[in-house]
View 1 (cartoon, rainbow, N blue to C red):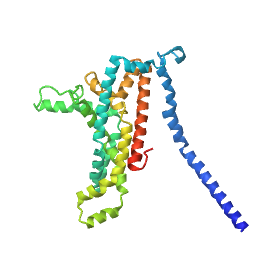
View 2: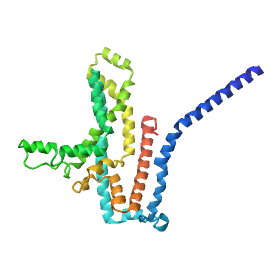
View 3: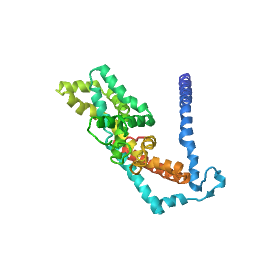
View 4: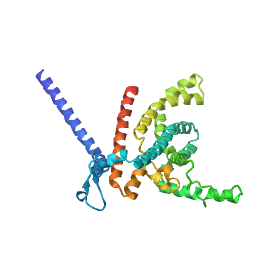
Length: 317
């Protein structure tokens, strides 16, 4: 009896040692990614200290005046600053809202792409729609300039055919700026956004399709009653993450497309922070705005996580 207990205890200790060794091995695997995350996501946060100084490049921070919360007070007390910030926030909310409103496009694209029976044609379509994601926004603007500038292909064709007498200002005009940014964003990210939904479709139990076919379901009913319901959990998680990043429109797209004509409607919060810090020569103000944006984003993430836990019974983080 004692030998049996001793043997069982020895086996348990052996299993624990094996698990500990595997745990250490897994930790070493993820250690490089943890270091990268710390280097690019957490270490730069020490720069938040500039928001509490009147920093004047290229002086050292110790040579600059400590102003405490003056920059934060200026954001909410200066009428000109408030008016400008409200305009920037309206652009941010409008573009983010349009992006959320069209977030079902990748879902529909993935569903219809999955219905293509020709394998080679399906691969060609998926490749052509995914490639734009790997093109930088600088190259995207180069394409847009070649096509839609005053001397671009579209205007040249319309003028040569007699449909126009003067070129249309597609790029250097301020009309429909939000819609234009949405269309370029959709073109660039549609195929890439559909990849996750295609993976989710591949994981759907095929018995569900067979059972539906036995009940007489056609192609569109299969999509409506089997495929789409199976994609809803993935869709809702991505929507909640998008809500948490509502203020993060990014910088690259709006930076390359901005000009003196459309600046009023294209300047989102990230671009505004860049312009304030780099061209406005006020890095302390830009840091203060960036801090507030990060705090709001964290709050939105916490709220979305709480909503997900209550509605779906699962948290997103």
